[in-house]
Image 1 (cartoon, rainbow, N blue to C red):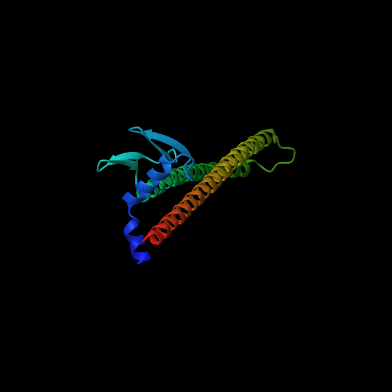
Image 2 (tube, rainbow, N blue to C red):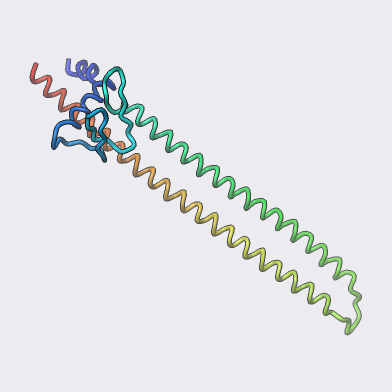
Length: 196
């Protein structure tokens, strides 16, 4: 009988009424993070929990809708992070491909220059040495570019890890709120069963 009564009691409208009851009783234990006032009624709910008028009753939207909204927000944020990482990965890959093409071109140019230099004792090597210095400079620029790209990529990954930690923390808080609401509903059902 108690389980049947609990099943009949736990509907979105009943949850809204219970939240409304706790929001209106001064000094009651509510686990919301802020107070909202709609049509003269005060609700203690998280700041992002919408309060609407449905069927002539003003109250917070059902918890199922709120959780769905939160998960959609998390999904949107994760999609943004994913596209940002894909964009950075694509740019890094493009830079590496252009670097590889430039290196290949430089190596061919260097090979053609060295093959055209006659092997004569005491030949003038200044042109060859200046070209070699240019290649070394290009290697140094490429190295700096790669180092900067890798640092950007690393900081992007660290940002993603921080966001994931924040999301885990938020989901943990939501789970705690669910457990507290469930405990309060169980207590209300026990009180009603004793009264019958």
